[in-house]
Structures are given as C-alpha cells and as structure tokens.
Image 1 (cartoon, rainbow, N blue to C red):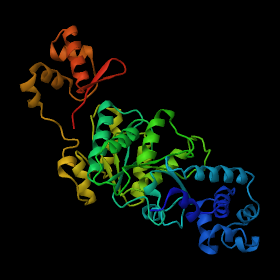
Image 2 (cartoon, rainbow, N blue to C red; image 1 turned 90 degrees about the horizontal axis):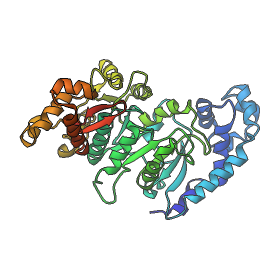
Image 3 (cartoon, rainbow, N blue to C red; image 1 turned 45 degrees about the vertical axis):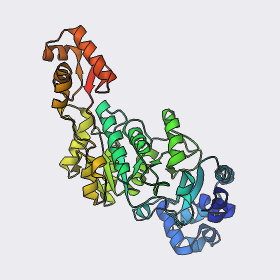
Length: 404
C-alpha cells in the first residue's frame, strides 16, 4: 500500500494541478465546454498551449479568448490547494486528494452521469484514496431528507443507515442537519463486515470547499467521517456555503449511488431535487411513508405516488437493488415492535403509547384520550422519554418513537 506522502506526487504534480485549476476557474467555461476541450486536445496543459483560433473549434470565441489569460485568482488558489494536499501527507491525519476525470480513482458511476464534475476534492481515511482504485464501490445508497425531521424520522434514518451499512452498502449523504447527519451517524455506528473493511462506511458530499465545514454544528461529525470514511466536494478550497451550490451538489450524491432513499421530506424539500436527479440518472428511488398529518411526510408520499418504491424495512431496499444482505440486521430495520410485548410488561405504559399513536400530540389531547390526570400523565411521559420510547418536541408536544 502506498503511503500518503507518495499519492500526491504519484497522482498529480504542481504543474498539472495548476492546469486543472486554471480550466475550472476560467470565466465562462463550464463543465460541458471543458469536457469538449479535454476530448479534443487531451490534458489541460495541452489546451493552454493551443492558438485561440484552434480553441474556437471546440468552444465559443469568447471562451477561447478567456482561456488565453490565466485567471487572477489562480496563483493564490494553486498555493492554497498544494499546501492543503501536502498536509494530507501526515500519517496521523486524513489523506487528501484532487481527483480528475481521468484519474483511476474517479467513480465510474459518477463518470457515467450527464454532468460529472471536472475535479473532485476528497479527504478521508488513507486506504480509500489509494492510487488506481475508485473510492466509490458498486454497492452504495444515498440517504437524504429533511433538515428539521421529526424525532421518528431521525431515528428511522439512523437505524436504516446502520442496517444497510451492516448489509454491505456505503451510505452517501450531504452532511446537512437532520436526516443527512442521522444517516452518516448510523453508518458510522454500524459494525464493519471485515477488518480492514472493503469500503468506506459513509461518504459526505458537501457544498463548500473541504477546508470548511457547514453547518458548524456538524464539525465533530465531519471529523469522524474523515477518520473512517470520505468527505467529497467539487468546489475549490475556500468556497463558502453559497445557497446555489447545495442543489447542484445533489447530482453527485445521487450519481455516486445505485439508489436514493428519501427518509422524510416536505413538499418543498431539497431532497426531492436529489430524487429527481436520481431518476434522470436512471437510479432507483425509495421513500419511507409517514403520518398523513405530518408535513414532513408529504414529500415522500408525493414520490410514492410518482412511482418511488415504498420502503418499510432495509430489506426492501436490498431486494430492489438485488444485493445480498444480512436479513437479520436489515430485515428488522424499520419494523414495528409489537405492542403486546409492552402490555405484559407494563399495561399503563402500553395504553399511553397506543393513545399517543405516531403523530405529535400535546398534553391536553392526551388527557382527553387517556382519562389520566395531568400529573400522572407527565410522570408516565417522562418515564417513556427516559426509556427512549417518546421524544419531547418543541411547543409542548410529544411523539412516539418506534424501536427498530
């Protein structure tokens, strides 16, 4: 196995890096034009050696003129990026790489999509960034959803991710708050199938440069992913969290994956953009149904009406993807625990859980349903909350958490 210090030199020298950065920074030259230029002239170093008239055969005259002059920001970005790569040479920290379209590490599944990024910045556990091996294996699943999920939605994401990872899938998501974070955490919680594992537990595709973490609340999670999995971005170092970048990066999340599972989403959720790009890329789309009263379930219900596969357990996903899995681990994820088991142990607790149902509910409504006095009800709710069976929500509401 090559050590981190060897990868940068082996995969890209500073001159080559400068040429790729120049191509991506040139104003008016997007991915499509850049790919035409690469197809016609070869590596970026050759592109910049061509006369303007010849360049104009593969792009517009304005683009050809822009290619003739190095962008003003190139020198600074080159030094920043080169220094960042050298920092990844330390044996104690995560490895770092800039992966181009022609690099053997570039994921084939992403290369086959309509708009693959010219460059991927990657940071993570050293063995996932070895030369001559793609970091994205065939068995992977995107998991996305609301940034403000219900307590049950977040628990579903965590449990499904854990079970699907234990069945061998790599979990791909976007490091956002809510469902994304829960999916990454569930994958990291999973037991590795082999030592060393054959694939990263999770890949986070971010909408900023890899020298930034957004949102800051996920800084610790990002560090844990970098230690065992991978962080990936198409954006240059220093790129701040710009609103337009996050929908655009969704095509990478779905493009790295064989399917996309939407755990919980409102009708206006950005997760539906990921689902749409997955369909356009010929990938499977899955959705977990929820309460008809929950706004956070309406996006999933809309996807199911449009043909997404309704999912009740992780095994449903594995069967659709035709991947071998652990039926013991995956088959139970998302399956409801029988209420009668609680009845034998604690009849009062079971009655309250049945009265609570699966929708958020306030104290007054629970008093009306159960006939319990307020003080006794609050004691029972606290007991259930400490046991992990009930979550306390904003606005004085409570929601049942089904164990998976």
